[in-house]
Image (cartoon, rainbow over the protein chains, first blue to last red):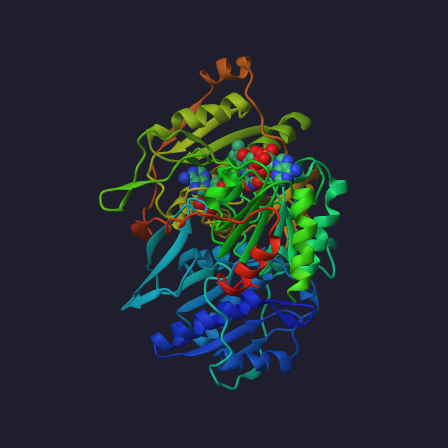
Length: 323
Length: 246
Ligand SMILES: Cc1cc2nc3c(=O)[nH]c(=O)nc-3n(C[C@H](O)[C@H](O)[C@H](O)COP(=O)(O)OP(=O)(O)OC[C@H]3O[C@@H](n4cnc5c(N)ncnc54)[C@H](O)[C@@H]3O)c2cc1C
Ligand SMILES: Nc1ncnc2c1ncn2[C@@H]1O[C@H](COP(=O)(O)O)[C@@H](O)[C@H]1O
């Protein structure tokens, strides 16, 4: 028996959210007196995967298959189903991502496992039930959800559990041979378009976000300068992406990306409830807005009332000076 | 072609969420209910595909008790041909998925459109489970969906961008913007919705794998600390020494 955790990598490096999931899964393995096994179907090499020992994994199962160059839901469900069988696992942990969003429910249905998604803390386990604290009502509340089923699956929200490299284990990396079914590869990948070199918004520690108050796409230079200075990702409100001032994958909120960075800086954003829903699990929120009555100041920890066009360049200079 | 759109009946996005009974029950008093915003995108794209493909029927489905019928009627007013309500309180994704899969198996839909997630449970679960129960693929979150015959070309959001994929019907798609613009029902739509068929069926099975024990509100913010506009260096200092986030 062991706890399983699924790992995703980006250009050979394991994603931070996956490392957080490993730390969470390790805590659960310790709580249940079992070992932790990680599963990777991505491009991380053996050395990198062996490094997961520091985060608590005793074993890493590596799946290699030329058809896995781009990953989609069905083959990954098959991989995990067979890993669960081989390891006799009762608990599978994922980090939320665009891939695991389809994999976790599919795996749960295939195994008839209880599933809790959007989990914000290491779950409690007592006997055969697991109780997970979940973020619900789009960040406006939490639920304590009891999960049953012989096997249980959870998906962790970003920044919910700190990734800790102090487990002091050594992980052995083993190949996992998977029997795929004919219907696993019916999705034909055509192309991928990705902002390269930038900090990925869902993974970012700091996010600099602009709203309609910035008047037009030509004014995003100062937002990008500030982001670059802080090593931050850029984001925007919904009208900004609706107006095509910024790409859609930067849109944050109820109907966009939900972020949970350490620092979220909202510039020229009014703070509509649907925007705040997507940022409320940020550790610290800074608002810059010319309207002292803007609702964003209710959600913010720090605020500057004033004209963003004057404040932002000065703020960037101040961050640079403080480095 | 037969299209199924699964819709949730959820509190309006501006709702202030509160709980009663010692934080064990959602307080519905004064709450306006709407079609889930993501489901509304799915519905809008479904209607566009139906209008573009003669002979297509579009069915809206909700698992819910009688109070969801006004929400279902809105989907009929927007352009769905008929609707099904599975008469049960949707408290568990597995339970809901089994109900939807049972109907879908009997009806053989070519395309099942859902939202990327419900905005009450935020599960992001039901579409993936239904797809697995029907042994067809689930694609999520879908920002663009075009059909040529039985082949779909889809743009799917991924971290920091999107990917384009192709697959054949049938499949389940979890939709989000900008797949289509929300449809505002016309007066004629609202009138005709009253006479469209809304079939009520009883649930099958009934097993649940999760249950909510209690709710909790996030801690209240302690209030914003305002920094003078001419002192941005003070903000930098506070973020460094007080908040310790840079
Ligand atoms: C179902 C639904 C879902 C939605 N989902 C989302 C979502 O996911 N994300 C989202 O963002 N919105 C969402 N919205 C829209 C939301 O309600 C707001 O309309 C939107 O967030 C407003 O965007 P904004 O703050 O950029 O623009 P505005 O509300 O127009 O605010 C602009 C702000 O800029 C300030 N400003 C103007 N000039 C300056 C200046 N020179 N310097 C500094 N500040 C300045 C103004 O004081 C104002 O506060 C949704 C709405 C609905 C109905
Ligand atoms: N009770 C329900 N009735 C109909 N469809 C539902 C129901 N619950 C969830 N769905 C569909 O499944 C999607 C994902 O829901 P969830 O797993 O709750 O996030 C929603 O956007 C709907 O399309």
